[in-house]
Structure formats: structure tokens, C-alpha cells
Image 1 (tube, rainbow, N blue to C red):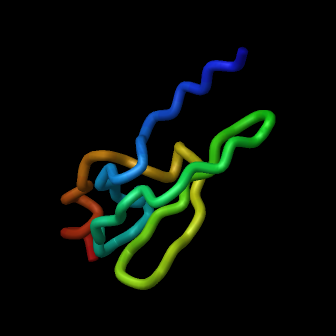
Image 2: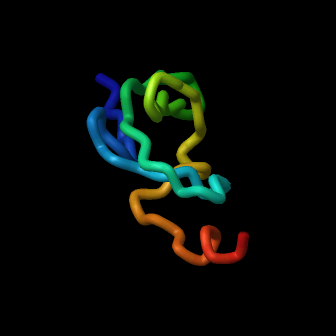
Length: 67
């Protein structure tokens, strides 16, 4: 049996660490690879894939105010 420890679950609201607008995204899917997880995030009609280190549950107000 394999146990997968994911940081985020489907339907969680998250933010991209590099997004200067800090738009809300919803975790829509999780792809399990042999060495890592890929999270599929939805923002409006767009869906993009990201590694866990690109994603945060907390909004980064400093990145929005620096632009």
C-alpha cells in the first residue's frame, strides 16, 4: 500500500507564490507521479499545473503591494 501525503486537497483555495495579482485558485485535480505531485489549479476558465513549492494557502500581500 502507498500513502500519499499531499499539502492541498481538491476544492482548497490557494494562491500562486509568483502571481503579482494573487488571484484565488481552486485545486481541481492532483496528478501523482513517482517522485512528486502536480496540482491542477483553476482560476476562472483557466486551468494550470503547478508543483507544491509554487503554491500557498496564504495570500502574499507584499507581492501585490510591490507592483
